[in-house]
Amino acid sequence: MNTEPPGLSSRAQSTAIALPVPTSVALKRSLGWKSLLCVVYVTVCSGPFGLEEFVTAVGPGMVFILLLIIPILWGLPLLFMSAELSSALPVEGGLYHWVKTAFGDFWGFQAGWWWWISSFLDCAIYAVLVADYFKFFDPQMSELTHWGIALAVIWFFTLMNIRGVELVGTSSILFVLFMTLPFIVMIVLAPHFLIKFFNTIAGLGAPKISHNPFTPLVPEGKNLTSVLSTGLLMGIWFISGFEGVSTAAEEIKNSERAIARALVLIFPLVLASYGLPILVSLAVDPNWQSWESGHFAKIAENIGGRALGGWVSIAGVIANMALFSTWLLSYSRLPFAMAHDGYLPKAITRISPKYGTPVTAIVLSSTIYSIFAWGDFQSLVIINIWVILCGIFLEFLALAKLRFSRPHLPRHFRVPGGKAGLWLTVICPVAVGLFAMLASETKEIVAGSMAVATGPIAFWLCKKFVKLRNA
Image 1 (cartoon, helix red, strand yellow):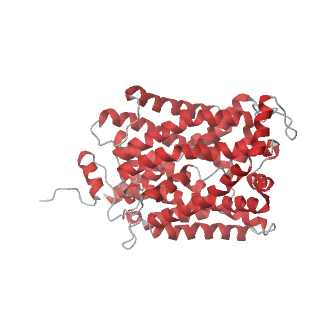
Image 2 (tube, rainbow, N blue to C red):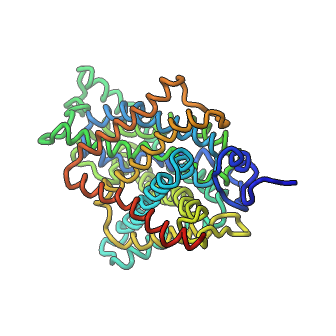
Image 3 (cartoon, helix red, strand yellow):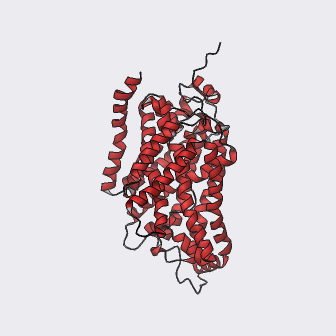
């Protein structure tokens, strides 16, 4: 007689026997290894686009310091945590179930809620940025036309996500190739600029560069603490997302092993994707104060002509499309998992019988993104990071709790270094994140705290008006 819990996929059932973690039914495992690698790369990095404003905000010296510190104190711990928990609990909803299993329904809801509401701004911004690029062809573009382009992006990739993660993965392979190749060409064509760059640093002189490109440490007139806080928040933004793909674990082939392997392999590629373009760009154009979003295209044009500059510019559009596509894949699984637990309407658990994807959750998320794409919410990015950081803190605490409370979970990847490695993995990123949050300006602390407070309020409302009705 079959006594397995109903409604669980075969791999999730083995986990659920030891853990009361409800998952999905009829989801289709179709995301293969190569596609998974590219999906992870896009969610974590998606190329160096946006780093230009990072350099302008904190200065070239601080950028390189942060690109050395953040991967060690933040990136690696996030990778280790995501890899271990993905292998221990490879279930749909990922991070939501990690925290719920460790600390119960309330904190699990907070993690899922905070990540999902962060997506309202995240995904809308990616679609808006694509529309912004089209202003090059029509500088007088109306707000309605601009919104229409953003909607076209949102719903094109919504249809792609509904048709299955395999299609998202295949498109991600093409996106990654198109995004990374122009920067490889830039690096190959720029050795003479790099020679001048390092000659300057060594004091040997270079006729076209008259100062050390690593100076100043911070922009003139700015406070070191403020710059460090801003830099940490922006750096964390750029080196995050390792846990993103976990939410679609039951749509990934051999996810209990594949996710961890993909995360480990992608990490050095992410560092190279950030560090090398900045190094080359500072050698070619040391006037970093004038850098703005899209400046890499101008630098590419200086190196390889209009063709290379145009390629980088188009790659910027593709990067934002890729980010929207992969993060829609990730974020939309959170309301699906929360609805499966009764905290959101049961209709959100509907799965497409043809494609095996959570169609209602995808459409609901995209509808919200469409609304946010109309307004100018980019000034709320710092607040958004607050919400994400609180969710990540819960994930690190769940890592430690589950290591001791559920020691027999099948972990195909474990944080290296024993107990010392585990505690370093938890303490370092939490300390970095807390410093970045608390060193923010007062108005950002107040606004960020208010955004975080929506979690407990939403839990009470959903438990009172949705879960009891579903019972």
